[in-house]
Length: 147
Image 1 (spheres, helix red, strand yellow):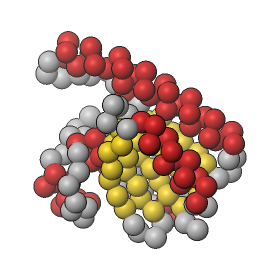
Image 2 (cartoon, helix red, strand yellow):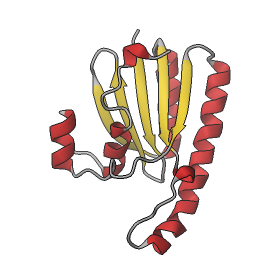
Image 3 (cartoon, helix red, strand yellow):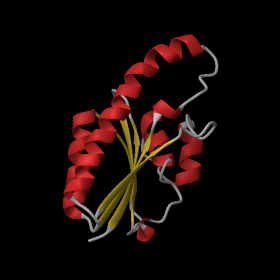
């Protein structure tokens, strides 16, 4: 059994970044219900699981085209609440084995193009911008240090 850190970029196309203690890593794009199933599977098959969710509710800047971005932000904020509720239940069911954090979006740390992402992470398969954003939430973190 190993430990895993999971990054989540909520949305219709949910980005999922995975970093395992055995050095395996992956970046995926899944529908939200399949991402929930993946979290449950990871909790049942790993020693420790830690999830970091990019919480759009904490975002205060929207940059260019901010009016149109704010329109779409409402549904993402709803998704963040759904993720928080789901993960709170998982934590209740698996105390000591599972934990999560809703984190503030890091300005400038998202929307990497695939070439830059490949160079930074070593993940060379085709990935969506959602998968890349999710993986960057966990890149460089050591799953062995999960408490």
